Amino acid sequence: MILDQTALRDLAQMNDDMGVVSVYATADPRDTSASPAWRLHVGNAIAALRESATADGDRARTAAVLDRLDTLAPELDAVLDTSRSGMGRALFARVGGEDVRTLAVQMPLEDCARLEDRPYLRPLAAALTTDGPAGVLAVSRDGVRVIDLRFGQARELDRLPFELDNDDWRPTRRAATGQGGTLARASGEDDRFERRVEEHLLRFLSSARPRLRATADEHGWSAVVITGGPQLLDVVRQGLDTGSANREIVLLDRVVERMSLSDIAALAGPELRAARVRRCAEAAREARDAALSGGAGAVGVSDTLGALREGRVDHLFLDGAADLRGGRAPDGAYYAQGETAPGVPAAAMVPEADLGERMIAIALTSGADATVLPPDSSDALAEGDGVVARLRW
Image (cartoon, one colour):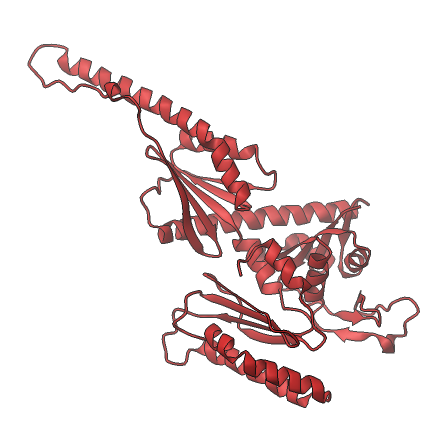
């Protein structure tokens, strides 16, 4: 499974009254022991699922969960396999179905195992916020190197080489003969040649802009780092500025054309992450300000849940560290802690210990976007107890 917004929405649609198994593991490359701590932690979490199912009073469900965990043994072993690639691994499977969805990314996720009616999605939503699809355009006098960077993994998509099409432009370097002016003329020819090369390079980059913009759109890049000299950076940036209004552009005055993909990922990754978080935090502030001024926004758990129940949320913003609790009414609707559905007594409300996770699932299944912001960048969410939303109306 390739992680993107479409995949996240598809996962949000997965539900099962018997339960959906969600397993996350982060293979710590620093732990090279035979039984690394992360593997033991996730293995214990899976064992806890078995114990919880055994203690369930519903015998049919208990048997179904235990049988499903048994049939998932090969897939679970693969998630815990220290020899497998991918730092972050995830698995999702219905108890009452046969399909199994797995993914691996080159970034940390969590170490946990859950059994709920829907997949546990917060770690993936957080990963998409900070490390989702992005691009690196390495610009130099050799041309443009086009690199896709997502979830810590860099992949070269294309190279657009710049080549002079006229050998007659090459300067003739005359040997010094002792006659006055020979070196000066040679130097002048070199300067004119360099200027012509620069002019044609700029024209080449201008002509490449539609192709680069199409690549960015095709691969869903929410942010792009452009590297190279200052004049070259600006030419390429102008082409991307006419594309998606939601795409963040980062200019990096450094030539990385000949660097390895891993080195480029290490250099550009933090820049892209900071740009995306900055853009998301600004969008959250705009939603908050709209709500406070009576516009199309919602602040706080209660108002946001009300908008979710009405299908009015266009984009949900959630503090990744927020501990949100509430209750579920008999009709399946969720309410903030201390609130009840109209006409429903408090005793009939089922406590919900992870309301934030439920809000993410509701947003995604309704076609809204869900952004989980890192705790150190979610100041815009403070007034709403960690939740704001941009509304459709």
